[in-house]
Image 1 (cartoon, helix red, strand yellow):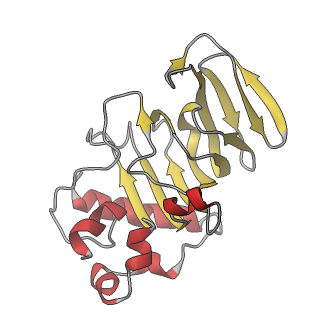
Image 2 (cartoon, rainbow, N blue to C red):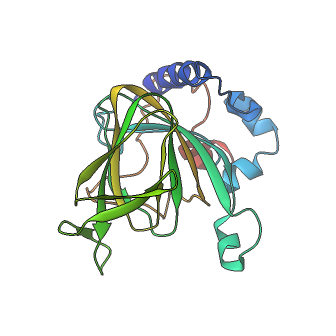
Length: 226
């Protein structure tokens, strides 16, 4: 992705988020220079901040996702069973934009439709090797009730509705009818190690630096923040 495209997505996404009355925290608006000046260790350690991905395939409108990690704990605390063991994200799934089939090893997550169109999730259970089970039904909690779907069934969430996905449940999702603002409340999030994709794809985008970044992505931290 070109940096100019990333900058434009940041602008559009911030406006979309604000249209639903959700305002990002102050650190979201730090320039790269400001981020370098402040104590940025918490943002780096916990990978908090902006995240735009096309999964390395250069087809963001078809295959991509916007995310902002608002808060996040530390994976090491999970083993101790104490500390900040949770995370929160705000995301945007554009109309018909696919977030491809994947599962998590550790993370349990509530996926919440915060507004816009319908959020459609394609769901599969997993077999004893963790692979997609294309024969068995999949059962997930939807706002306090258990919902069972056939393998590959589509769960459609209207604004205000949510689903809980436990570790191992395979899922892909997209917006139907309009762009969708998505909330995610989860176990500590580690996007570098806790994603298993069905496709052979990457988690982060490759950036072509055709202009200066407006804000840093979490994937920029290793380069910009030493």
